[in-house]
Image (cartoon, rainbow, N blue to C red; front, top):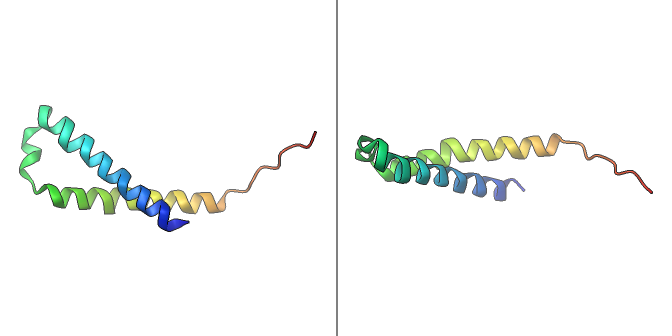
Length: 71
């Protein structure tokens, strides 16, 4: 289901923003916090998480199931 994967991917993008900007940038790169944070959340969700999720969904659809051996 691509809708679910897209939502999970966007949440992953938000998680990456959280780690990058709210944890690492506060200590090591404080000038990154001067940019609008809401815009950064949207960019991470839409341009990082969403394409990754859709690529993953497409790869899963192309994958052929492996037949398990019968005992």
